[in-house]
Length: 223
Image (cartoon, rainbow, N blue to C red; front, side, top):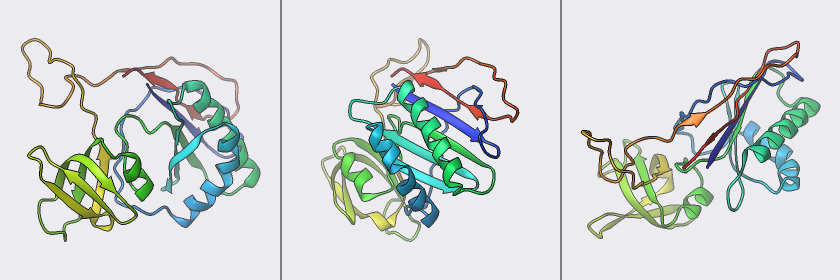
């Protein structure tokens, strides 16, 4: 199950409203959080500890604050909703972001970006898709099973049994890859190792009486 909640705050103390879900997952090239993101991570850490949630990733750029939360055994919509409200209120009180911004709180999902040594270590044993920087020798696309990772390197094993060690600093982007068992639709083929269809998201629209327009986006994906 994947849960996504988006809170778009225009100014301070804006009230939420539901909007349709977007399942796009942007791939970022920057493997280092900005100083602002680091400060925000420290700020919300006590709230996450109270809710028994862990911060998987946090990125602040272009007026968008994206917070990915996780919990052993998975995270549900109620936890995401509660975390979103607590984080939003905390940001208002701290006034750490002076301009209009979009706060997006969600779970990492089945296919998640790998940006830090901790991310790579947590993905050992999973299928991954990696793209190296243009200056790195060899094939830029490295797809296989992640079999090892430390603070500076990772190792990917291929189907033929061979493997390749990469420096994390040489990676442009990386993410885990979900391999499903769904059969293709009648009359249509599917690529090996991929489910025939993406899981669908459902959402319902609600109304609020707030003075300022803002958006919150809850949805649940089964899978």
